[in-house]
Length: 289
Image (cartoon, rainbow, N blue to C red; front, side, top):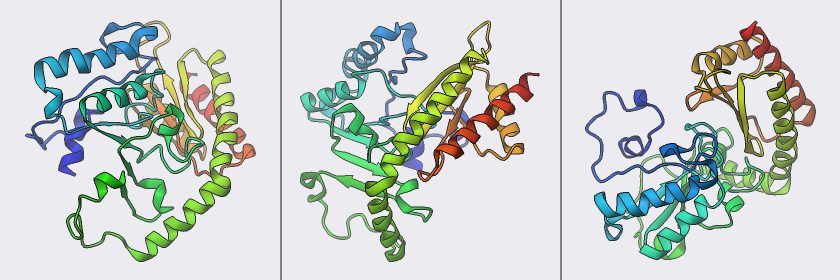
């Protein structure tokens, strides 16, 4: 949508041809411990990113009393499957509480059990005011949801946020059953199999110096590729590995500058995770040969 397009800052091509976008939208830095913004140290990246909000944005561009909401992904999706540095998400919660700002968690990619918990924000020990969910929520059917605190949601009168195809009965029944399955077994499976997949992929770093990081939680795992000498993102290699994975029967996608994401069904077994890691290793070996 025009609104979400104004919020995204992953790749320029996603915005090309749509300017001007919505005014009043400002972007801050994500506390990426693997590629700290503003030339900060990984150990201080959280303080640097939170400080940018309070000392730069709030002081020069958008006063906090004019800020309606801060929107953040508890784990970055399109930006590269990045788990934020410790303290970043709780720090945002503290800023919002102090200034009376609504905190919105974008859980479209990370929610509904994918990370081993129902919501990725649970790993951070905070509760947002609003959660945006979609993708896995519908179990393969198109469904999105905005979940809000009662004191916020109750301000909306019936019909104030309606649409023609919203709340489809069949899709909602499927989502209800899916949530039961996630709570009963799939969430635990994502944690267990995800840990195994993460371990197998991390072991490839010793074999391939082109892999700089393996990161994620549960069955949301990213593998970042770099040029071994310069350490710069190796986007062309990531694209080549993705295409070679297709040829070997492994479906993966790129994200960020040079990261390949593993986002399999929550029903993935340990044996399937093992096979996926083996095919991935073969694809890398083929591309760098």
